[in-house]
Image (cartoon, rainbow, N blue to C red; front, side, top):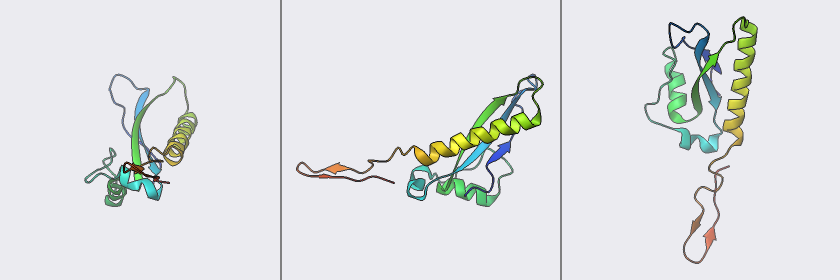
Length: 118
């Protein structure tokens, strides 16, 4: 389970006060963590703790960086609601879209052996 779910970052340009970058962290199902693992992976968030980066590198947690264009006059509550909605969609995508459902299924010329990652 990630320590945090949403982290606000910076404005990517000085000329656009309505665009911000953000990081989302999602929990990866245990059986699929090896596909997300990447030695040395660190967060785009410079203040991530060593434990956060270890979780990312091990594949226990995955990260996505995005941008949000804030409509003029939008309040902080609207921004937070958007980010929470985006995080829920990201977590749902990681949990429910199994790209490895048939991973490792083999055929030796005679017999098929079904496999997959739950």
